[in-house]
Length: 191
Ligand SMILES: [Fe+2]
Ligand SMILES: [Fe+2]
Image 1 (tube, rainbow, N blue to C red):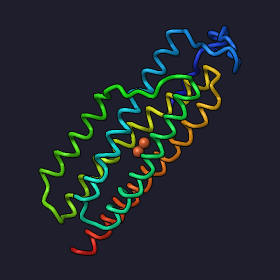
Image 2: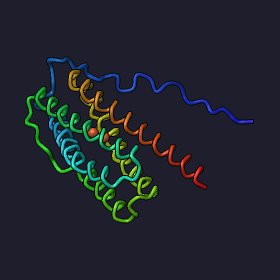
Image 3: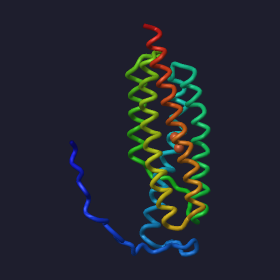
Image 4: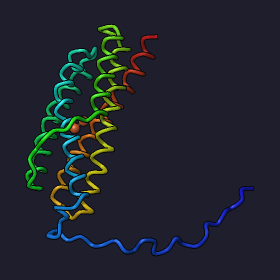
């Protein structure tokens, strides 16, 4: 029989000192605002590079389904870039890109998969799906956190825009999972 370990009471009113932030009382000059804008520049760089990498991934894909998914997400990624530009405008900041080492690495990995797999194979597609889903998960993590930061700073308009992109990244990730699952079936029926 499992023993039930009761957690000691409630960690009660723990740091209930959180200051309410109003829409007008944005922390424009705070270090946190600067940090937030810096991270927006980072994902802006990431999206701008991804939009150039996706057509290469589309070209490398074996199945028309995967090629179509990359084509679709290229257009969506263009929208993500424009959404970030709206975010910068709302914050009265210049839209600027700052190198995102994580995305640079993920795209390098995608390139590696293309050169290490044979054209016209399902292995190539499996590798491309893996690389693309890593990218989507990176974006999901980034937009999720930035959306929460925007909310906590009272930038509701910015949070809503980031949420839109976040929803699209999640949908893309799910679509890729769907394609991966259809491969498993295809592979199975070929055996
Ligand atoms: Fe994106
Ligand atoms: Fe994406």
